[in-house]
Length: 226
Image (cartoon, helix red, strand yellow):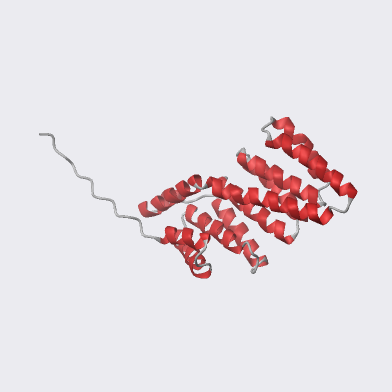
């Protein structure tokens, strides 16, 4: 994939620089989507399967494996969780395990490996959890620098799930992807729709900030030495 940066105008380059800075400065906000999904997805799955003793045992083993990863162990600490995710991939606990692996690998900047686990999680996730996993995958793809593919993933989700609760978040990632890919005018249209469709929300606030004109820089002056 190419971003065609050599043909961009100085204004376009400035916009991309600003968006890159925004992405970097707000990484905690982006990753928070994944963390929220871990908590909520885990709660949904536990409640659904609380009456099944075998599932209770699955979750007990899962949380033990998850803690090994969360405590910052080396690469070998991922093995129990990977084995668990493979063994129970069609079960809610397996979906959750794949998601945890994807999130941990994103935080380690292992973006391609993270994508594998996110996609495995998506295969068997329920609709609510799938939306959250998709947002995490989009964040992962943006951080990997594959901006155009992030836009494609966002469009696919929007087409298949036009009324999903997660649409504004997905549209925000789409707008960021467009802007970072140098398609600033297309990005502006998405920001405008966010501002119009979701007023008085976090998404509208970000869109308004993105659409605000850049302050003009004072012209540089050459001071001659006396």
